[in-house]
Length: 427
Image (cartoon, rainbow, N blue to C red; front, side):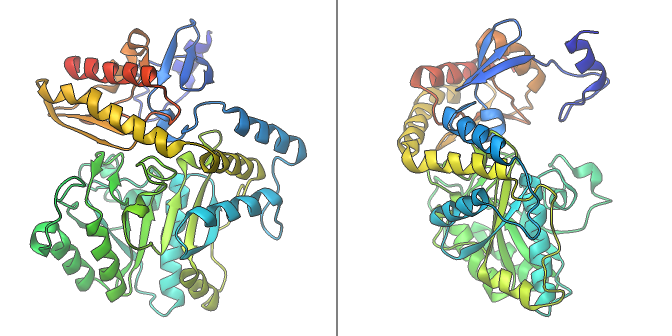
C-alpha cells in the first residue's frame, strides 16, 4: 500500500467525506511561503497554513530556539512547577496586550482557549454570587472553534455546527453588526445593531455570564469586517449589566489586521482575551487565555477558589519557546510595514475582481484579502488546481480568500492574487 493509498484508506482529514474524499497533495517540505510536493512541484501557501505561519514556514530563529529547548526540556507539567520559557513568554505578552489583562492561562489550541474563557466567565459569575449566569451572548456569523462549548456560540443556522443544535447549550444570538469597517458610523441604535444587543443583554442579564465576539473581523463565519464603534458601546452595555466581555482574537491576533490585535481598533479592553494560531508563528500548537485581575481575583476569592481547568500540556516549554521566538521576531521586525505593503497590493490587484460575473464583494484588511461570490465555491476544485496555479488556496462557502504570511514578497503576492482571480472566473 502506498502512502497515498494508506492516507485514503485510514487518515481522516478535516471537513472531509471519507466516502468521497477530495484531493490531497503530499507535502514533503515547507520553507518560507513555499510548500514542496512529492513530485517536486512548489506551491505558495496563501493560507499561512490556516492563518498561523506569519513569519513563513520553518523560520530559522524559531526552529533554532525549539531545537535548543528540545535538548533541555521538551515538557514538564505546570502543576506546582514553572520554567523560564513560560515566564519569558508571559513577560512578552504583557508588553503587547492591553494593560488590564494581567493574568495568563496557557492552553493547547485556539478552541481550548475559548473553552477556558467561557469556563472562566461562568466560574467568575458563580464565585461573585451569580450562579444563574451560565449562558452566553454573541453575534451571528461568528466562529469560535470546533470543541463542544465553543460550538454553542458559533452561528446556529449558517455555521458548520448547526447539526449539533439539539445537543448544544442554548445561547443568545443577535444579528451581526450591520455597519462595516469602511462605512461611516451611524449613532442610532436602531440602525447600528446596538438596540437589539441592549435588549438581549438587559432581558437576560440574570442568565448571561459573558458576551463573546471576534472583534472587528469575523473569520470562518464569513470574513466580515465590522465597525469597531459597535464594540465600544458593547463594552458599556456589558458593564451596565454585570456581564463579562470576551474577545476571540485567535484569527486576528499578532498583526493580521495591520494592528497587533484587532482590539487595538477599540478604545477599551475586554475582560478576557483568547489568542492562538500565530502565537508560535505556526510552528507548534499553542494558545493562551488572558484575563483581567478582576476576573482572576473574583474566581480566587470565591468557592472553590481554584480555577477548574488544567491541561496536561499546559505551558509546554517547547511551545512557550516557539511563541517567545515568534514574538521576538515581531518586536524586532518590520511586520507593520510588511502588512501595510501586502494590504495595498491586495487592494490594487484584487480590484479587477469587482467586474467579474458572480462576484458579490471584494474586501481587504491588513493581510486579509477576500473575493466573495454570489454562490458557493468548491474547495476541492481549488485544491485540484493548486499545482497548475502554483498557489494553495482553500476557499469556503462563498469566499475565495487569502491570509498570506507577512514575509510574502510582491512577486509571490501577485501569484496569489492572480490565482484568486483565476478561481473567481471558474468556481
